[in-house]
Image (cartoon, rainbow, N blue to C red; front, side, top):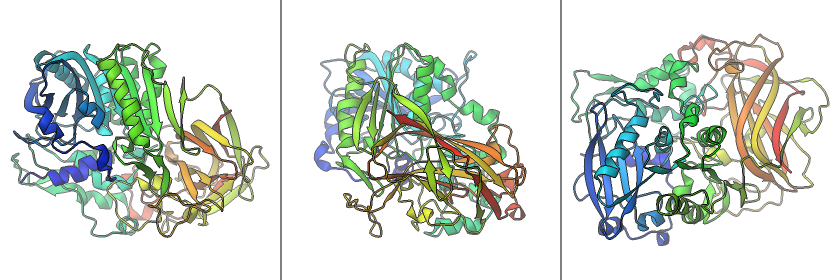
Length: 637
């Protein structure tokens, strides 16, 4: 039986989530069937591997159409004659405006042949018949423009999350027919996106590991992987009870599913989990998989529009670094940035009300992007003049504090200055350093700080990015520093650096910094989805947060222990924000050393490989943060 439910539950959830839609904005479900024909083909790559490709072509043959393509590891289902998607393309406007829409299962996934490699490495100087995802994309585009009827010779690519990564790939050493690419929530480097953040393992993604690491040796239209069943709704307690990461190894061997791919193995080892366990540092394996290092290979003939969400828990690093990389090397490139108040893939949903978790940002934000930005971008470069005069701004960004869009000629804006604010005594965040004393707290390995107060189990966490942080501020192992009530608006636009001076009684520690907008007491609820136990009065909105695994403070490739009780510098880069802390609010910084089970527990005793740490390695320690620590803000003047 074809497991389309599992495809939807896992693959599509990773991209879009499960927000409701406003049916009034959507065409009827038979629109695609009434207006398109579907053709499933296999396209042979230069090394002989055949990739399954589905082509939706407009029935009206009176004009020639551009091609819009998405390459995906999440399946181009439904498969089979007469079975069609009910929505195709990036949005309903593009679906109705006349495009040939193509979906392809990438190498080693679903109905495509070959061996899948998670974040398959780019090969800069390929030998004859040597392949990577860049060449697979090139070969696919070459076949499409030569073999698909009624195409106008112009190709665009798009995708969200992992498909967004493949959209980035398409722009590297690009085929001449590729005119526009829109990587959205695109993975940039697996040591800083998704499963790792600055070397810390996102334990909360543990259930998604098998989606990417389960062996498959032949095409299949059914799910060949399974996801672990925690058998509980309390993931905090589940992971606490499991203890060291090595105790999770048993979850990454699976009974062979009865699919068409026969094997003489009874067990399938998860190759992605093995990769994570055996490569705890930023070694050649992870370095080779990074794609942002190759933005100098994006030619000026490809227009790019990078899209992301300020509250994307999965892929915030990737789109920002992709945009900045193209800007650095592609001085003549048309390269734009769009960032809105969205979680992962929120811009592709059709909800009128736009909220992330408990926090409401406004109406029709995603619908406006789809109609006025995304559709206009592809139309100009695939159907229009294709010059740099697209009518779109260089940076179209949403101020998540003022709740309004702004346009800039460059990102970050030119009128941004760096300001250092200091973590002072008496929970103060001050514009000048007052002392250099130590503030201590006990990091209890048995009572780690939760990342959310919700008691539930999630496949991938998202809501926490805007969660109320009062529950954390009231713990003794979370240090709090905040300004006085602001007498004028204070806007941050760009990246943030936490320049900590710390010490620990142990030899290892993680450091987490959160930037929080403390709302006034008279703030009112304007989101009917806010959790019943919360009020907007004094709401502690998390604007940005990040972790640094302390062993990587000087090098991600060569970790090192702390010297017990020695004052040490730890700098954490927090990704860009665009947020105004409004008059009457306060800006708060929280510092802690556990964030569970968003990230795994640090033993707080240095070991060579945390994935192989023993129970005895985990010890409660006392940490110190010194008051000459500072936060460097990018302040818009």
